[in-house]
Amino acid sequence: MGTWTWFHKLSSPPHFYRIAGKMIPWFAIPAALLMAYGLYAGLVLAPADYQQGDAFRIIYVHAPAAWLSLMCYSVMAVAAAVGLVWRIKLAHALAAATAPIGASFAFLCLATGSIWGRPMWGTWWTWDARLTSQLILLFLYLGYMALRSAYDDLGKADRASAVLAVVGIVNVPIIHFSVTWWNSLHQGSTVLRKGGPAMPPSMLIPLIACFFGFTFLYAALACVRVRAEVLRRERNAHWLKDLTAPRLGAQ
Amino acid sequence: MTAQPTTALRAAGLILRRDLALAFRRWEQVTHPVVFFLIVATLFPLALDPKPSLLRDIAAGVVWVSALLSSMLALETLYRADVEDGTLEQLTLTGQPLALLLLAKTTTHWLLSGVPLVLASPIVAIAFGATGTSQGVLMASVALGTGVLSLIGSVGAALTLGSRRGSVLLSLLVLPLIMPVLIFGARATDLAMQGEAADGPLWLLGAMLIFAITLTPFASAAALRISLE
Image 1: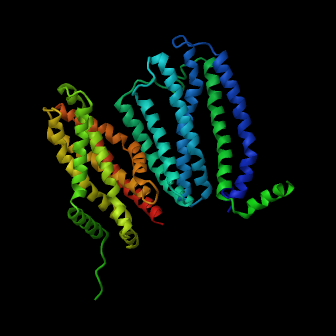
Image 2 (image 1 turned 90 degrees about the horizontal axis):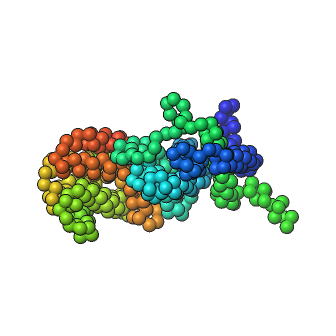
Image 3 (image 1 turned 180 degrees about the vertical axis):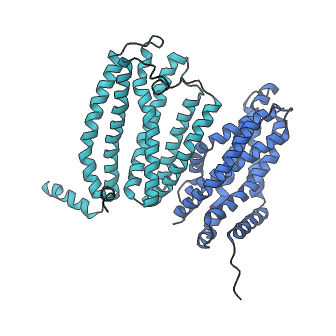
């Protein structure tokens, strides 16, 4: 009792459904503000790069998307592991809801990187380490989603895909390491590195705003998607009928 | 007189013997993956320009891509027959550690699908004109790599058992996970074919194999229990 009560309460679908509904604006509004500021300041106000010119501005979408594609995979794997160990259905719902978001960000990251690569590297695609490991990450997401859709039984789909997500997260560092060893052309880290960021504040602050904005965006999207998952899973539950009955009666 | 309880290791040994005996009675199960391996390797010179210099350069990659695909082909038969006749359900009920039993099954799979590839890979290397090859290193790299393939593949095979459209799905799940093996395996093979020292990638392949032996049987067991429910 005590410490864990909130956790058990949160893992009950009716309670979560209500809380998540209330949280959506708290995530969506900061996301909109931060992204509006970050993108405007990054795309319009920030000075052009002395080497890359205006092309560098794609970083304001590219880098946050890359960060989120990795974060989503971690969230998905942790949620899947929690669901597997403590048999919490809501954790499986979170994992299932996160996968398509993560896959979209992985795709966005690859697409923007490719658009940037055309003028900078002179090619749409190169078999560079980071590009390749990002591509493999996208494949991992697609495999996870394919496995989910291959099961008719939701409970089995949840647990089978959870095992895959956990196996995948163990493998992600190995893939990253092996691919880096294999080949690398991608520029090193700009923000997180020894001796401070290699960027003036006028470029850096919008980027940080974009990082937080994208992360809030994920939180808002996850709330919406998990609510939808809960509706799908609990469509025959009494609490849901009680919730919708007044509205249906009013029509 | 009470019956002697079967130890877990003995049970695993019995599974190994049973699976080998079954496979040798259905001989095509052993030969098909090797034939497939050789056919896929034959496709490359036909599709590309059969210049000796080009073939020598791609030989390691060809060995590995063919080995991957042929190992994938053999994975489908890993659990399929035993699920259909109920053997696997009995295994989960024996009270023996399922992970160990599955490790035995996976070992059989490697003996039947990996070892023939190990033996066939020097033939491909010679056919592709990689003459300076040290055959021992080549075979060691293929042996270590196919071991990891079998282990990771067994997780995928267990996960897809209960699902519709198993075979395509299996490749979709397993292929991204085994790319590190492909990278280091092909690197070691390539070094071996050029007659250079391949210790680095070989050690890494060995490390991956040990890592896979320790973890994947538990993942396979968990996956199998879910599929059989």
